[in-house]
Length: 446
Image (cartoon, rainbow, N blue to C red; front, side, top):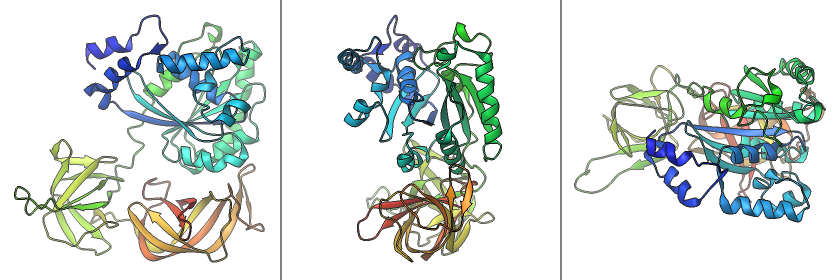
């Protein structure tokens, strides 16, 4: 990073920045090239999710002056003796009035080391679908736990959803340490309780941090009141956690989004296939197979916005040209000849139902998978999942909004699928109602 950019980030004696300063940061080449971390927050109601995000934004100097003035004025009108940082993320009027999160609130900020996209998701059970939406693309989940209450029902639910969505990293923020006099014993009790529960989950990287979001202890700055804690602050963990291996760089998957034909004299014979790499590493000269036709060819070139490259990997957006003239269109997939996905019309998946109206018996929907689309029918509901106890409910198969169930679909056209745990891009689907065009469910292929 350039010295000029570092100077812009060091705004002396101030927690807010002007829009001119922010524009200078975000238009710099160094900023555009920085690594991006997406993370979501989850936890029980009133555990302090929105306050934590507000504190992150405030202490990392990522708040505009006019935003801070508005939040300060609102806090004064409420008669508070402190600035209510949760108002920075609770954007809906109902959220501000009730002091809760209803919709998924996305916030963006950056430090000299990394860019971040935050999805502040609701804690109430009736907004489970909103959490699934916010967590579906996350690299990391922040699970907030009130140190006084420990692991509660909503903690278990959100942790299970994070596990189901294969979020690679979990950070358990044990919040409100100021209310227990920053007790190490209280923190350790919550850690042991969560570890016992998490043993049932498919999560391998779990970290614990004692914090006070209201007072900023261990959020951005190290707290002297928690000197018994030897780990880093929350922001330090977010800046340094390794996410480079979160993408699948083994199985080559390139769903074609569109065919590029410039139709001009300079590129008269150019025929490229554009899309976003969903997995693996592609190199010029690689032997590839186009699905569903099964025709084989070799990669002639890999083009990007900045010019031709020798190799490309997930999640880059590129245009691939082939040495042979093959009929390739949107929905096709370019893969390695010796490493292909499963091609099937029978798809078994865990569905999270998003619509107030449940599925109709043998109802027909449009299934969207990568850039492919087909009609589908729900052939069988195997069981519903009790996301509080992690038990299967095989007797109750009536799916309602926010329910998660294992179902079997039959599609009109074959899909090119991988297991969700292996590749989140090629292992996920959505169902769309044909008549209303509403997205009714999101699915993780088993």
